[in-house]
Image (cartoon, rainbow, N blue to C red; front, top):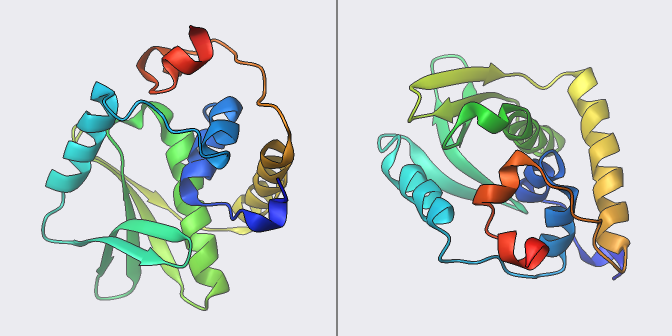
Length: 168
């Protein structure tokens, strides 16, 4: 695969911090089990949460869950089922904020965990930008590989829609 043909998106950033094998599978269009109950639950929470805010805004290769404006600033919200993978969610949101900044739009981020009734503010800074640059470089290397990274048993595996693909 020519890495120039593929663009990194927020989902690949999220999975990079959870499972690098899943990055490869998704980048190579190997579709996960769409009947996975955890995928269904995530979709339901996403659709039913934060009804008052604008949702599912696509800008280029990014898809924002929630977009709102308060008195001072634009706020991009990322809705997640759980804060269990908060680092991945934070990096995904930082990726969105970075892409928006590159387009000349300044915004703050907010991670939203409706089931836990939690919110976390996320602000793009130089440290985050450097981390994203390193992650994107590593993701392109994974995407360009002819074989997926070796599977590694992690807690995420038990609920993963690729479970059978990796562990059958």
